[in-house]
Image (tube, rainbow, N blue to C red; front, side, top):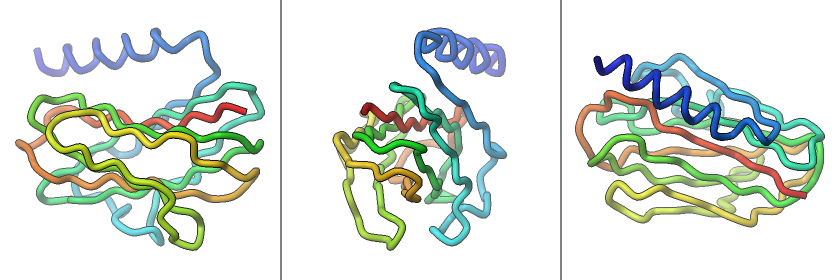
Length: 153
């Protein structure tokens, strides 16, 4: 039954965003992936030249695997918005965005099971940016987090 509900939620999320150009990535969804540092970050996941594009990445972080890194870039410059949707009650994640040199550009550390959001980061064309998700607290996850990168130019 849990798997059915997870699949149903994901399908609903997919269809609710069909009006925009978007790409979805499903990295291997298990705790303990090798994307725990910038050097081992998954990606780069690239936004196309659409005037409004979104990348969706689904992943898992937990007590055993506290951090995940993803590389993203865009084929056009513009304003980047980053967010992580908390899909499970009681989970607490924080979100950080870095440039290619590792300089922190923005962070969201709300606490509790609130969604984390970083808005209005200027994105240079074809430059690599890193998104970091940190597990802070919560039960062992049964559903993936829902990470997004949107470019509005």
